Image: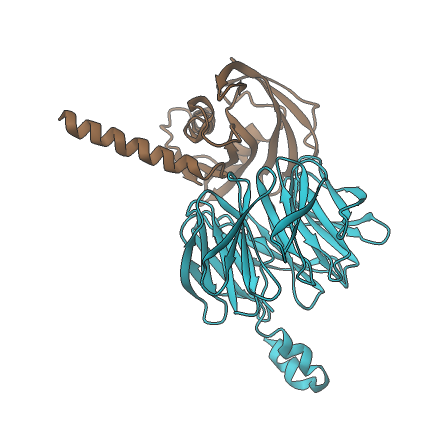
Length: 316
Length: 198
């Protein structure tokens, strides 16, 4: 209620208010076959879109104002218009699509196939498949470096990360991390990558260029996904079996807080304001909003049954 | 007649093939029963984490005598043991949450060239949440279980697939809630409602 008023009054901060006015969180509700769209300014669900095929992963294409939703049972992904909030089409990939990502230029969509051990590369304009790249076993989380040079893929059953050269669309390097990496994040300068290792209850920190292992930090039980906030100074990790989020100081590499969220948290994304973190809680059917400065849950927003939102799910 | 049944089998086979093609998806089973008794009276029976004498399938429980987060209990069933950790306990809300951390196996089968152990409860990463709520003077008990099938790779054997997991969990929840209802309100004919989402 007060936010638009605050915006109107604080002319100096007008840029801040308008810059994120359109930021929306796309939350996949796997058990409901739907996607809840949260207006992050008003902090409420403004639309629920039907997406068949047990929607799981989310990727945002800011250039084309599109959102991609992976549908493991649909064997592909759905394309949504992130402005008009409607479904545009579906794309068949085959197998079991889970992890999904878009490049920074908005030209390509990458879809990881859990069983085919591959990443399919699609043209974001025509949705023609350009290439299939064989990676490690059960590829899951993916992220693209800020300079659009690399795609990082977590190969869950291989306990490894692959770095794909986006100019050549080939693997440049693969390295071991903890047991069963699932979610992955790269910092805003492209210096480090972080993986949540489900079976070893820790986070591996790697040099993003050469994939050199820098550190391993213990977190809670069954960590699934990671997100950075406050100028990359804090890493937030969903601990699925503890119903918490671990907060790691990325300088000291120590856990500085454990925040109680909903049950079975999985997907986690930073808001473009860099100071709020959204967490999808599968069991509780809602989203926890964390203030990265106070490390407190400031809001809980009801979504749909089985909220996963695996991937980077907030638009600019 | 023969033609029809052949057709039906083929359709079933196709359906099973499709259902398995996407790999493990977590299930959420919700079992509920309404008992004609005060909620507090029902909670009194189930509130101690190391007491599951109300459940007919569980022969004995060994715990540490507390209801503290992290407490471990070992259930002995007719075919093996299940170890569970207490994840959350809320006496005011009359609820607790737990997860299975270990299970004995009931045997081994050969599948896709590998030996696969069959756990006591053929599920993976199982977590449960049991709670009692007052509904206009009656007690509503809700027992929610979340789990994957036991087999993690594609094309599971029948012993370790979704159907086996669903059946086993249904049996545990249903027989438990029925027995609980009969214990608190003798002579009642409890009706347990089961809902599975995957």
